[in-house]
Amino acid sequence: MALYSEKVMDHFRNPRNVGVIENADGVGEVGNAKCGDIMKIYLKIDDGIVSDAKFETFGCGSAIASSSMATELIKGKPLEEVKQLTNKAVTEALDGLPAHKLHCSVLAEEAIAAAIKDYYEKTGNSGS
Ligand code: FES
Image 1 (cartoon, rainbow, N blue to C red):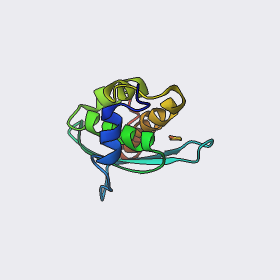
Image 2 (tube, rainbow, N blue to C red):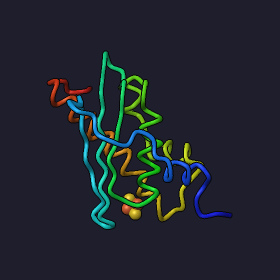
Image 3 (cartoon, rainbow, N blue to C red):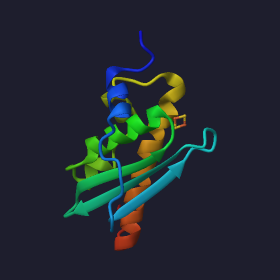
Protein backbone atom coordinates (compact mmCIF):
# COMPACT_ATOMS: atom_id res chain seq x y z
CA MET A 1 0.00 0.00 0.00
CA ALA A 2 1.20 3.49 -0.81
CA LEU A 3 2.34 5.49 2.17
CA TYR A 4 0.00 8.35 1.31
CA SER A 5 -3.59 8.17 0.06
CA GLU A 6 -4.68 9.69 -3.24
CA LYS A 7 -6.47 12.41 -1.30
CA VAL A 8 -3.36 13.36 0.65
CA MET A 9 -1.37 13.57 -2.57
CA ASP A 10 -4.11 15.60 -4.26
CA HIS A 11 -4.37 18.14 -1.43
CA PHE A 12 -0.58 18.32 -1.19
CA ARG A 13 -0.14 18.93 -4.90
CA ASN A 14 -3.18 21.19 -5.34
CA PRO A 15 -3.81 22.71 -1.95
CA ARG A 16 -7.14 24.51 -1.56
CA ASN A 17 -7.51 27.83 0.24
CA VAL A 18 -3.85 28.83 0.35
CA GLY A 19 -3.32 32.46 1.25
CA VAL A 20 -4.20 35.26 3.59
CA ILE A 21 -7.56 36.83 4.46
CA GLU A 22 -7.07 40.55 4.92
CA ASN A 23 -8.94 41.76 8.00
CA ALA A 24 -9.66 38.20 9.08
CA ASP A 25 -12.01 37.86 12.04
CA GLY A 26 -9.78 35.25 13.63
CA VAL A 27 -6.16 34.23 13.05
CA GLY A 28 -4.46 31.27 14.66
CA GLU A 29 -0.82 30.29 14.39
CA VAL A 30 0.64 27.16 15.87
CA GLY A 31 3.86 25.25 15.52
CA ASN A 32 5.29 21.90 16.35
CA ALA A 33 8.47 22.24 18.36
CA LYS A 34 9.82 18.87 17.24
CA CYS A 35 9.61 19.24 13.47
CA GLY A 36 9.60 23.05 13.40
CA ASP A 37 6.59 23.24 11.08
CA ILE A 38 4.26 26.22 11.37
CA MET A 39 0.61 26.59 10.35
CA LYS A 40 -1.44 29.76 10.23
CA ILE A 41 -5.21 29.77 9.70
CA TYR A 42 -7.36 32.79 8.83
CA LEU A 43 -11.12 32.79 9.37
CA LYS A 44 -13.84 35.08 8.14
CA ILE A 45 -16.93 34.75 10.29
CA ASP A 46 -20.35 36.13 9.38
CA ASP A 47 -23.40 35.61 11.58
CA GLY A 48 -21.80 32.65 13.32
CA ILE A 49 -20.83 30.96 10.06
CA VAL A 50 -17.28 30.44 8.83
CA SER A 51 -17.77 32.14 5.48
CA ASP A 52 -14.13 31.80 4.43
CA ALA A 53 -10.95 30.09 5.59
CA LYS A 54 -7.41 30.29 4.29
CA PHE A 55 -4.06 29.01 5.44
CA GLU A 56 -0.32 29.46 5.20
CA THR A 57 1.65 26.39 6.14
CA PHE A 58 5.41 26.22 6.32
CA GLY A 59 5.71 22.52 6.77
CA CYS A 60 5.67 19.03 5.42
CA GLY A 61 3.34 17.63 2.77
CA SER A 62 1.01 16.10 5.36
CA ALA A 63 0.68 19.45 7.13
CA ILE A 64 -0.17 21.15 3.82
CA ALA A 65 -2.70 18.44 2.92
CA SER A 66 -4.19 18.64 6.44
CA SER A 67 -4.60 22.41 6.32
CA SER A 68 -6.09 22.23 2.82
CA MET A 69 -8.61 19.58 3.86
CA ALA A 70 -9.37 21.24 7.20
CA THR A 71 -10.19 24.58 5.55
CA GLU A 72 -12.42 22.77 3.05
CA LEU A 73 -14.22 20.99 5.90
CA ILE A 74 -14.99 24.15 7.86
CA LYS A 75 -15.97 26.55 5.09
CA GLY A 76 -19.68 27.37 5.23
CA LYS A 77 -20.09 25.61 8.58
CA PRO A 78 -21.48 27.12 11.79
CA LEU A 79 -18.82 28.10 14.29
CA GLU A 80 -20.36 25.75 16.87
CA GLU A 81 -19.70 22.85 14.52
CA VAL A 82 -16.23 24.06 13.54
CA LYS A 83 -15.27 24.14 17.22
CA GLN A 84 -15.80 20.38 17.34
CA LEU A 85 -13.43 19.64 14.44
CA THR A 86 -10.81 17.10 15.45
CA ASN A 87 -7.63 15.99 13.79
CA LYS A 88 -9.31 12.59 13.52
CA ALA A 89 -12.00 14.07 11.26
CA VAL A 90 -9.31 15.72 9.12
CA THR A 91 -7.33 12.48 8.90
CA GLU A 92 -10.43 10.49 7.99
CA ALA A 93 -11.36 12.99 5.28
CA LEU A 94 -7.86 12.47 3.86
CA ASP A 95 -8.37 8.68 3.91
CA GLY A 96 -5.74 8.37 6.60
CA LEU A 97 -2.20 9.47 7.37
CA PRO A 98 0.76 7.33 8.40
CA ALA A 99 1.03 7.07 12.19
CA HIS A 100 4.20 9.16 12.34
CA LYS A 101 2.38 11.91 10.40
CA LEU A 102 -0.70 12.18 12.59
CA HIS A 103 0.81 15.14 14.45
CA CYS A 104 0.60 17.12 11.20
CA SER A 105 -3.20 16.89 11.30
CA VAL A 106 -3.14 17.90 14.96
CA LEU A 107 -1.59 21.20 13.84
CA ALA A 108 -4.72 21.89 11.75
CA GLU A 109 -7.02 21.22 14.70
CA GLU A 110 -4.91 23.45 16.94
CA ALA A 111 -4.59 26.27 14.40
CA ILE A 112 -8.36 26.40 13.88
CA ALA A 113 -8.94 26.36 17.64
CA ALA A 114 -6.43 29.20 18.02
CA ALA A 115 -8.17 31.21 15.28
CA ILE A 116 -11.55 30.75 16.98
CA LYS A 117 -10.04 31.80 20.31
CA ASP A 118 -8.63 34.89 18.62
CA TYR A 119 -12.07 35.66 17.18
CA TYR A 120 -13.71 35.38 20.59
CA GLU A 121 -11.03 37.57 22.15
CA LYS A 122 -11.50 40.23 19.48
CA THR A 123 -15.26 40.22 19.85
CA GLY A 124 -15.20 40.05 23.64
CA ASN A 125 -17.08 36.76 23.61
CA SER A 126 -16.02 33.98 25.93
CA GLY A 127 -17.14 31.35 23.43
CA SER A 128 -18.86 29.27 26.03
FE1 FES B 1 5.66 18.25 11.42
FE2 FES B 1 4.33 17.33 9.40
S1 FES B 1 6.33 16.73 10.06
S2 FES B 1 3.81 18.98 10.67
